[in-house]
Amino acid sequence: MKVLAICGSPRPDGNTSVLLREALQVLAREGLQTAYLSLHDKQIAPCQACLKCAKEKNRCAQEDDFQGVYEAMAQADGLLLGTPVYFGSATPNLMALLDRAGYVARHGDNIFQRKVGSPVVVARRAGVNFTYAQVLFFFMIMGMVVPGSTYWPIAYGLKPGEVANDAEGMKTVAQLAANMAWLLQKLA
Ligand SMILES: Cc1cc2nc3c(=O)[nH]c(=O)nc-3n(C[C@H](O)[C@H](O)[C@H](O)COP(=O)(O)O)c2cc1C
Image (cartoon, rainbow, N blue to C red; front, top):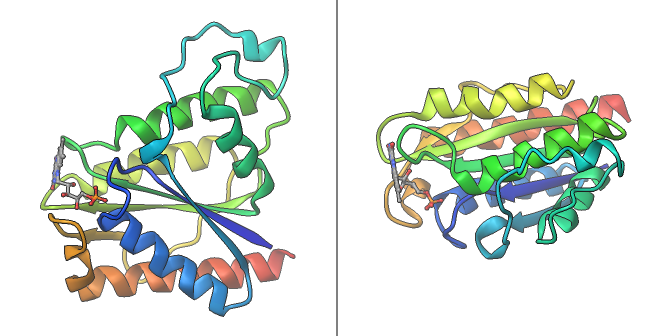
Protein backbone atom coordinates (compact mmCIF):
# COMPACT_ATOMS: atom_id res chain seq x y z
CA MET A 1 0.00 0.00 0.00
CA LYS A 2 1.39 3.35 -1.02
CA VAL A 3 0.62 6.83 0.31
CA LEU A 4 1.45 9.95 -1.68
CA ALA A 5 1.67 13.32 0.06
CA ILE A 6 1.24 16.37 -2.16
CA CYS A 7 2.39 19.72 -0.84
CA GLY A 8 0.39 22.64 -2.24
CA SER A 9 2.68 25.35 -0.87
CA PRO A 10 4.91 27.42 -3.14
CA ARG A 11 7.55 27.03 -0.38
CA PRO A 12 9.51 23.82 -0.90
CA ASP A 13 10.52 23.59 2.78
CA GLY A 14 7.73 25.39 4.56
CA ASN A 15 5.28 24.40 7.25
CA THR A 16 3.05 22.27 5.02
CA SER A 17 6.09 20.24 4.10
CA VAL A 18 6.99 19.76 7.80
CA LEU A 19 3.49 18.43 8.55
CA LEU A 20 3.35 16.13 5.55
CA ARG A 21 6.80 14.70 6.22
CA GLU A 22 5.79 14.02 9.83
CA ALA A 23 2.75 12.10 8.54
CA LEU A 24 4.86 10.15 6.04
CA GLN A 25 7.34 9.17 8.75
CA VAL A 26 4.51 7.66 10.80
CA LEU A 27 3.13 5.86 7.74
CA ALA A 28 6.58 4.48 6.87
CA ARG A 29 7.03 3.27 10.48
CA GLU A 30 3.69 1.47 10.12
CA GLY A 31 5.09 -0.35 7.08
CA LEU A 32 3.50 1.61 4.24
CA GLN A 33 5.31 2.75 1.14
CA THR A 34 5.47 6.54 0.98
CA ALA A 35 6.12 9.22 -1.62
CA TYR A 36 6.28 13.00 -1.46
CA LEU A 37 5.59 15.47 -4.21
CA SER A 38 5.75 19.27 -4.01
CA LEU A 39 3.84 21.54 -6.36
CA HIS A 40 6.28 24.44 -5.83
CA ASP A 41 8.22 23.59 -9.00
CA LYS A 42 5.29 22.31 -11.04
CA GLN A 43 3.52 24.32 -13.70
CA ILE A 44 -0.14 23.41 -13.42
CA ALA A 45 -2.48 25.93 -15.02
CA PRO A 46 -6.16 26.25 -14.08
CA CYS A 47 -8.77 24.06 -15.77
CA GLN A 48 -9.81 25.54 -19.11
CA ALA A 49 -13.20 23.78 -19.11
CA CYS A 50 -12.46 22.61 -22.66
CA LEU A 51 -13.93 19.18 -21.85
CA LYS A 52 -11.35 17.44 -24.00
CA CYS A 53 -10.94 15.06 -21.03
CA ALA A 54 -14.46 13.80 -21.80
CA LYS A 55 -13.23 12.70 -25.24
CA GLU A 56 -9.69 11.52 -24.60
CA LYS A 57 -10.15 9.63 -21.32
CA ASN A 58 -7.81 9.97 -18.34
CA ARG A 59 -5.88 12.83 -19.92
CA CYS A 60 -5.89 16.59 -19.72
CA ALA A 61 -5.24 18.32 -23.02
CA GLN A 62 -3.12 21.06 -21.48
CA GLU A 63 0.59 20.40 -21.92
CA ASP A 64 2.14 21.16 -18.54
CA ASP A 65 3.15 19.22 -15.41
CA PHE A 66 -0.38 18.05 -14.60
CA GLN A 67 -0.35 14.61 -16.23
CA GLY A 68 2.71 13.35 -14.31
CA VAL A 69 1.20 14.42 -10.99
CA TYR A 70 -2.16 12.88 -11.93
CA GLU A 71 -0.51 9.56 -12.77
CA ALA A 72 1.33 9.59 -9.42
CA MET A 73 -2.03 10.18 -7.70
CA ALA A 74 -3.56 7.31 -9.66
CA GLN A 75 -0.86 4.91 -8.44
CA ALA A 76 -1.33 5.74 -4.75
CA ASP A 77 -3.76 3.95 -2.42
CA GLY A 78 -3.70 6.87 -0.01
CA LEU A 79 -3.42 10.61 -0.59
CA LEU A 80 -2.49 13.41 1.79
CA LEU A 81 -3.17 16.82 0.29
CA GLY A 82 -1.45 19.60 2.20
CA THR A 83 -1.99 23.31 1.83
CA PRO A 84 -1.27 26.53 3.68
CA VAL A 85 -4.18 28.93 4.10
CA TYR A 86 -4.01 31.82 1.65
CA PHE A 87 -6.64 34.51 2.29
CA GLY A 88 -8.90 31.99 3.94
CA SER A 89 -8.58 29.29 1.24
CA ALA A 90 -6.36 26.56 -0.15
CA THR A 91 -3.58 27.71 -2.50
CA PRO A 92 -4.34 28.11 -6.21
CA ASN A 93 -1.49 25.63 -6.78
CA LEU A 94 -3.46 22.87 -5.07
CA MET A 95 -6.86 23.90 -6.38
CA ALA A 96 -5.68 24.01 -10.01
CA LEU A 97 -4.47 20.43 -9.59
CA LEU A 98 -7.71 19.29 -7.93
CA ASP A 99 -10.02 20.97 -10.45
CA ARG A 100 -8.26 19.25 -13.30
CA ALA A 101 -7.71 15.92 -11.51
CA GLY A 102 -11.37 15.86 -10.48
CA TYR A 103 -12.66 16.50 -13.99
CA VAL A 104 -10.24 14.09 -15.67
CA ALA A 105 -11.18 11.39 -13.14
CA ARG A 106 -14.93 11.96 -13.43
CA HIS A 107 -14.80 11.79 -17.21
CA GLY A 108 -12.38 8.88 -17.11
CA ASP A 109 -11.88 5.90 -14.82
CA ASN A 110 -12.93 7.61 -11.56
CA ILE A 111 -9.52 6.82 -10.12
CA PHE A 112 -10.10 8.43 -6.73
CA GLN A 113 -13.04 6.25 -5.74
CA ARG A 114 -12.29 4.33 -2.52
CA LYS A 115 -8.81 5.71 -2.13
CA VAL A 116 -8.09 6.76 1.43
CA GLY A 117 -7.03 10.33 2.10
CA SER A 118 -7.14 13.53 4.07
CA PRO A 119 -6.39 17.22 3.81
CA VAL A 120 -3.65 18.70 6.02
CA VAL A 121 -3.82 22.45 6.59
CA VAL A 122 -1.53 25.07 8.13
CA ALA A 123 -2.02 28.78 8.77
CA ARG A 124 -0.64 31.65 10.77
CA ARG A 125 -3.95 32.36 12.49
CA ALA A 126 -7.30 31.88 10.68
CA GLY A 127 -9.06 30.04 7.88
CA VAL A 128 -8.01 26.51 8.79
CA ASN A 129 -11.48 25.00 9.17
CA PHE A 130 -12.79 26.54 5.98
CA THR A 131 -9.72 25.35 4.08
CA TYR A 132 -9.94 21.86 5.60
CA ALA A 133 -13.59 21.72 4.48
CA GLN A 134 -12.68 23.08 1.03
CA VAL A 135 -10.23 20.25 0.39
CA LEU A 136 -12.53 17.74 2.11
CA PHE A 137 -15.20 18.53 -0.50
CA PHE A 138 -12.84 17.11 -3.13
CA PHE A 139 -12.32 13.88 -1.16
CA MET A 140 -16.03 13.43 -0.57
CA ILE A 141 -17.27 14.15 -4.08
CA MET A 142 -14.67 11.76 -5.47
CA GLY A 143 -15.97 8.88 -3.30
CA MET A 144 -12.88 8.70 -1.13
CA VAL A 145 -12.65 7.41 2.44
CA VAL A 146 -11.38 9.95 4.97
CA PRO A 147 -9.90 8.97 8.35
CA GLY A 148 -10.00 11.37 11.28
CA SER A 149 -7.66 12.13 14.15
CA THR A 150 -7.97 13.48 17.68
CA TYR A 151 -8.71 16.89 16.15
CA TRP A 152 -9.01 18.23 12.61
CA PRO A 153 -5.62 17.96 10.90
CA ILE A 154 -4.76 21.65 11.14
CA ALA A 155 -1.76 23.40 12.65
CA TYR A 156 -0.28 26.85 13.16
CA GLY A 157 2.91 28.55 12.06
CA LEU A 158 3.99 31.57 10.02
CA LYS A 159 7.66 31.35 9.05
CA PRO A 160 9.03 28.14 7.51
CA GLY A 161 9.49 25.49 10.19
CA GLU A 162 7.49 27.30 12.90
CA VAL A 163 4.74 24.69 12.79
CA ALA A 164 7.10 22.25 14.53
CA ASN A 165 6.46 24.33 17.69
CA ASP A 166 2.74 23.58 17.50
CA ALA A 167 2.89 20.37 19.51
CA GLU A 168 -0.85 19.71 19.32
CA GLY A 169 -0.94 20.27 15.56
CA MET A 170 2.02 17.95 15.00
CA LYS A 171 0.45 15.29 17.23
CA THR A 172 -2.89 15.56 15.45
CA VAL A 173 -1.26 14.99 12.07
CA ALA A 174 0.80 12.07 13.42
CA GLN A 175 -2.39 10.46 14.76
CA LEU A 176 -4.12 11.07 11.43
CA ALA A 177 -1.27 9.19 9.73
CA ALA A 178 -1.53 6.32 12.24
CA ASN A 179 -5.28 6.09 11.60
CA MET A 180 -4.69 6.20 7.86
CA ALA A 181 -2.17 3.34 8.11
CA TRP A 182 -4.62 1.31 10.21
CA LEU A 183 -7.43 1.89 7.70
CA LEU A 184 -5.30 1.08 4.64
CA GLN A 185 -4.08 -2.13 6.25
CA LYS A 186 -7.67 -3.14 7.07
CA LEU A 187 -8.69 -2.51 3.47
CA ALA A 188 -5.69 -4.32 1.95
C1 LIG B 1 -0.55 35.13 0.16
C2 LIG B 1 -0.67 34.63 1.57
C3 LIG B 1 -1.89 34.63 2.19
C4 LIG B 1 -2.03 34.16 3.48
N1 LIG B 1 -3.27 34.13 4.07
C5 LIG B 1 -3.41 33.66 5.32
C6 LIG B 1 -4.71 33.57 5.93
O1 LIG B 1 -5.74 33.87 5.34
N2 LIG B 1 -4.79 33.12 7.21
C7 LIG B 1 -3.68 32.76 7.92
O2 LIG B 1 -3.80 32.40 9.09
N3 LIG B 1 -2.45 32.77 7.37
C8 LIG B 1 -2.29 33.21 6.08
N4 LIG B 1 -1.05 33.20 5.49
C9 LIG B 1 0.10 32.63 6.23
C10 LIG B 1 0.39 31.17 5.83
O3 LIG B 1 -0.77 30.38 5.86
C11 LIG B 1 1.45 30.60 6.79
O4 LIG B 1 2.64 31.36 6.71
C12 LIG B 1 1.76 29.14 6.52
O5 LIG B 1 2.55 28.62 7.56
C13 LIG B 1 2.51 28.96 5.21
O6 LIG B 1 2.76 27.58 5.01
P1 LIG B 1 4.01 27.08 4.12
O7 LIG B 1 5.24 27.43 4.92
O8 LIG B 1 3.83 25.64 3.96
O9 LIG B 1 3.92 27.84 2.84
C14 LIG B 1 -0.89 33.68 4.19
C15 LIG B 1 0.37 33.68 3.55
C16 LIG B 1 0.47 34.14 2.25
C17 LIG B 1 1.84 34.13 1.57
